[in-house]
Image 1: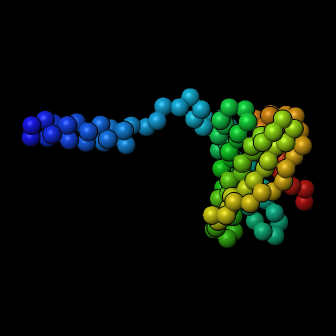
Image 2: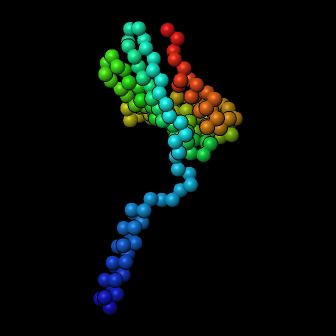
Length: 131
């Protein structure tokens, strides 16, 4: 009887260990769909570089991880934007910086988060501000 208890204990330990270490299989993982960078030189403040990597989950969720770097001040900061379709006609845009997530705005549109990224959000990121 003691052998069976020890065997059951050992098998349950192995089973529990395997469940904790195996990564869950999910068809809806975030996939990298875009990355890039753009530089801008301000006459007073020097050169700024913004680089980003965009992840997508289906067509209703987009996550943009961006990094702004100032050469003059030798300082950079990261920020994350989230585009999430919350209903048929609503898209929520939120941002996370310095560990705080804030809601920027809600856009009333029928377009998906993925299309909104490619048609509206990405062109804004890559446009150099007017002097």
